[in-house]
Length: 259
Ligand SMILES: Nc1nc2c(ncn2[C@@H]2O[C@H](COP(=O)(O)OP(=O)(O)O)[C@@H](O)[C@H]2O)c(=O)[nH]1
Ligand SMILES: [Mg+2]
Image (cartoon, rainbow, N blue to C red):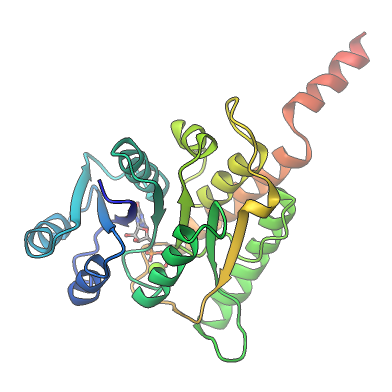
């Protein structure tokens, strides 16, 4: 098993898969492999990936029997990678919104030991090319700000599709149970890691690192509908409510009142 496995969730991506760039990523070296997870696509996505896997070493495909959503596709891929013995696991979007060279930089930062959880962050800085429409940018900023409040972490961008993690007991525990949400799962995963999960210890604050991207672009043909985006917003408010009013403290108060 390669040292680093990058999961690429795919739902009806036949037309958006850039075979040349994906092959370049898989061939980049540094003991990196790509695990595509086909999320019950109804187009020829699995065929395209299978052909690519024959041509390029270090590419494999896992198929979910039916569409389960990005959260489950990513979780299934990360679990498979960990079960196979990978030391570092991560994920990136199939449309390569985070370009290959930036994904590789992220992997180098993580495997170089800079932190246990390395997140790509879309910060508009001079010299960086972050191309996102105004509406998506500002909605994204509102979402990210609420996510940061819910997590109680000074994180700038939870939703960029590229992240790499070093294997820890906490990561394994955090992935063992399905996420509650379909599109706000990045926030849930960070929450599980930061607070500790199922008996596994929390990752200390300094083990999280955001890497500002030099380039990122919003690729057309998004699979995220306006309805799904609204749903993600509601999911996030649910996470915020649970983080501010955890059930245990509410229960405590009820018990105290009854006593
Ligand atoms: N929309 C959607 N995307 C999925 C699903 N399962 C996996 N994905 C993948 O999630 C990634 C992000 O999707 P994309 O459409 O680019 O969303 P956006 O860029 O956030 O608007 C892509 O790699 C998709 O193929 C699913 O059920 N629905
Ligand atoms: Mg996209």
